[in-house]
Image 1 (spheres, one colour):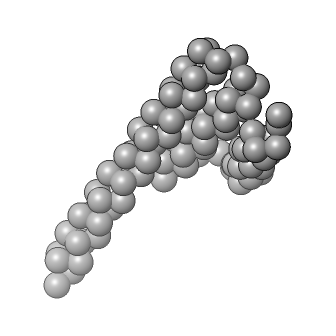
Image 2 (cartoon, one colour):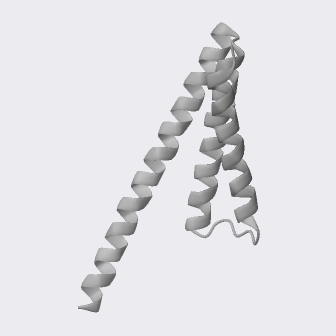
Image 3 (cartoon, rainbow, N blue to C red):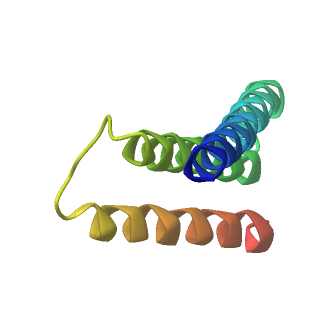
Length: 98
């Protein structure tokens, strides 16, 4: 019984990690596409979006590394909240900037 629970937990962790890594790869793709679009158009709106996607990718990667215990920072919550706030501000600027 305990072996089955442990096996199921390991399997579910594997699925969760695969999903998280897929999200990281997708956000890297979005950051790359927005950087490429900025280099072609030189629009500030796209630059804000590119930086926001890059920060989002950094945030997701940081969270994943924390989850698998490769990064251990005592006060990471403040830094993570700051990064999320910056992402929201950048997306807001992307929307309202003309």
